[in-house]
Amino acid sequence: MLIFQNDLTETWKKTDINSRSLQYHKSANITIRFKLSKALYSFKPFNKLYRFNSFNSPIHYNNLNPLPFVIMLATKFLYAVITIVSAFIIIADAKLCRTNANLNIRASPSTKAKIVRVVTKGSNVDITCQTTGDTVDGKNTWDKLSDGTYCFDSYINNAVGLPRCDTNNGQLSNDGLNFIKQSEGFRPDFYGDSVKIKTIGYGHACHADPNHCNGIHAPITPAQGEALLRSDLASKEDCVKRYTSYNIDSNKFSALVSFCFNLGCGAYENSSLRKKLNAGDIKGAANEFLLFNRAGGKVVPGLTRRREAERNLFCKSGG
Image (cartoon, rainbow, N blue to C red; front, top):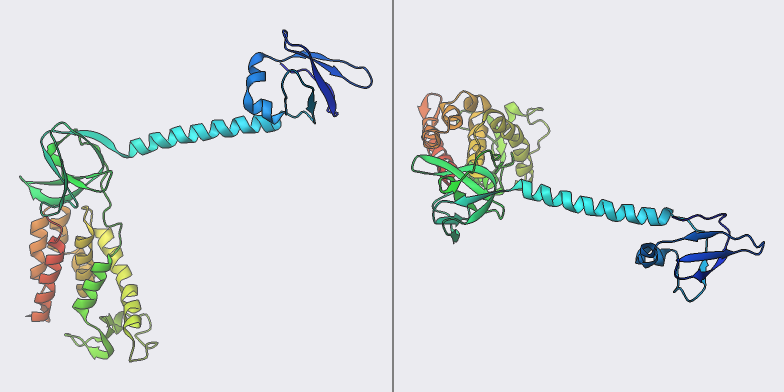
């Protein structure tokens, strides 16, 4: 324990090594004796902070103030706590499970995906979340591992209570955007679509435009057309997210956004496609695309080709 008086600049010297005592000398001959434990003498940060020299030399000390030392200790303690807590959070994000058979670890949740490695029966794998993929023996649940690879869930013990993977993150992929651009085709000038709706760019319908295309001056560039398309697709992405409760990957999400952009959100909301998808019937939902190929009550070859392309995109990653 330290006992001291005043905060004046003083000169200290060692007077009793055995008792670890220091004699305090002042010009006014006021002396105070106090003891410091051996542990405090040997504690390097404290020794350095307060400028202690060896016991055999005078110790010059300026303005004794324990606050910096306390702050230093508090900082080190806080750093240690944060490190430990962070480690527990990282561990909590993944669940360690054991395989019950030799298992292929793949790049995506599909039996057609590249095999990244093979783990033997009884190995431990770190699972972060679960998603849907190719159906094997009537099941389509796949586990996403901490390194971003996938394995089929049926060959994992105790993989229960895991969160669902948000593989599409509610966004249209670049491949999906390019798919829609290709499906729509680009027209720099106004034209009437298959049902005579005034349109421009990549399928930008003027009847749905807030200003009915009055602010659009044809001809437009592809960049202007893409800007209009992105704006149009925002509400379609929201539609897919709002009415789809089943977890889907980015290919399925993009196919559904294309479907909504072409036919409208109401068509998707009330469709058997959505109902089958939310019930987990992936193949049944995929087959529903081909039913929406009519305009004005007549089969349109262009719509048939588009529905087939959307179905292919929907099925691209399995299901």
